[in-house]
View 1 (spheres, one colour):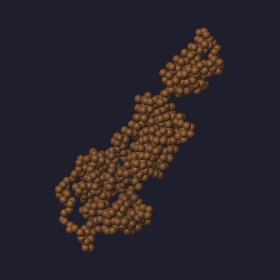
View 2: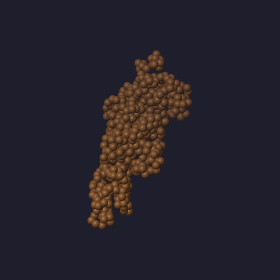
View 3: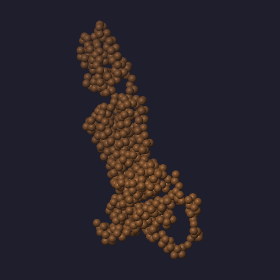
View 4: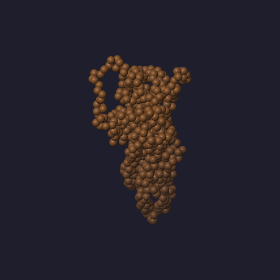
Length: 353
Length: 268
């Protein structure tokens, strides 16, 4: 009943609901439209050299000479993997028999990104034609055998959407409780509730249930907007996503309780909440991959609670990871949850003292 | 156990003698400050008992201990026969509390708030009936933020009545209200007492205490200075030879104000 009342009260506060969804959506819109991820104008071609002879060496160096081509070399397995991950547009295999009579070069291309792979195929075709003449002088001794490969072809949106979900979980957890609880304390609502035989555990349960319902709702909305507007490639299990979201939400709720316990007024609560949320927001790989950070910063930020949450959400939604597969992230999430709950029980106070 | 035994010996903890509240040797310190300094008093059933005193006298601390909101350091406190120091949760279910700040959740209307409070007591409530009683039936679907000051206080009293309490605590219920709204609230307090409930009232308005209270306790520096019916206290002062500088007239400015503006409630 208390939960129901507090849900009703919470969702009638349309302003709060609006902002808890609007901000992540706005950020998603802005970053999604700018689309930083696809800023590479060149095509990525992987070459698997199985011949290691003069001919294959010359082919590789000529390919390197083409400006629009970003050339990678490697073993067949690793290059095919890169192709599946969407990091190559085309992988060409130079067989051991190259240079000895008529040879077919097998070219796997990325089906998921047709613009880029078509460019890559065209480049390869042209190159093979010219190379054939150069090597033999007679009818083409090199041919190109193209084969499509299904890749997951990640876009920036695929990176961004799980990050945004993580961000909105944090914001709801932190700011959702900090402001209401500090306000309730200041306005005497807490005292009025304490004057009833209400059980403290019921009170906290109702508050947590309200916020976690909001978190679940946010996950749905952000996911829906990601899927239908930004063509987010969701490969995972929605239930896992909700589980991680709700447990992760618990961390930030507990942090919010701790902050509202430590602060006497909204004026002190707001800066503290921002002091916690802003660094987390920018250091936890929400907008950009942490791999762009200096090494030492990567080491530190991998332990951030938001990193655990966003990495877990990303693994689930992009790789279709199971809960077992993300156990290290989950462990981190649970450790943070324990830390936050301990701090919250120490700092939370009912009264403005 | 010791406390109970002694309490029973003293005949405390029972309401057989017609006492709603029994306080013996109550003491409360905050650090070096003694907020309540060993006070004893009894509140009879069905009386309106006033707790008067300047700010910092210890009234609020005393009331909060009676309400189970604060722990006492020493002494015995029985409310409705319940040992408050042993079982503060149980006390909360038989008392009603109206606090000075009458803020409630913004998102819920009056009916929903009363239902929520009833749920906190684990019992059903006739929310509409309760709103009628405090004259707020037509505001049933508004939120508290849309109410006037007097309406807020009346609603606050309604929330304190959802559990049909035997004892009602009113904390400065008329502070900030206009004369019409104050009189209206006094009538409400009288009607609640007429239902057989006991009321403990704290106030800074002496005219309010004089009109409403059967007995008042005047507190200062954590001690009770006097505890009598208002008339007795006034008579005692007069007997000491006290007289006002200015001759009292049989009407005052408030009478003039009410004569001109009427007793009707002014509420938007």
